[in-house]
Image (cartoon, rainbow, N blue to C red; front, side):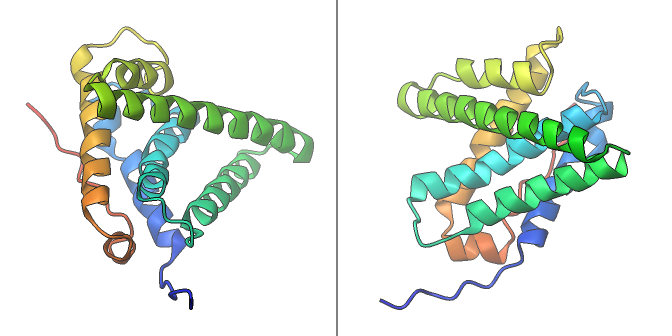
Length: 179
């Protein structure tokens, strides 16, 4: 069987993630702390939706997930270096980032599994409160906004084929300001 040639730019897909993670609305109106850690967590939150698409669709002949992971962690490393960290500090931080990444992905995965099987959003809410809001006392509205944002984007991605999602660079729904 001849493998279908995929045409995409992983940088464009990643740029969609970065653009959303830097939305002023999230920091000004959704009570997020504007910090490297929050942007890191938002990047993982958003990239999870793409990884989840590939997991649910069981697409084995694509390497987009791996390329996205590599691109994302290369960006994290570059950001650390731009912040003035040296080689030893960068290596230590990258190990922590990778461990954090896998922990968060596992929790989001469990939360989505719980939601899909039981229509129970509580684990997603807990995971978002813990990761994105760092367990800060926050109104449930904010946490539920992120839960619904995740579910809606995953549903949209799953309704589309891989080709459509790639053509659109896995375009996320716009951040919608609510009154």
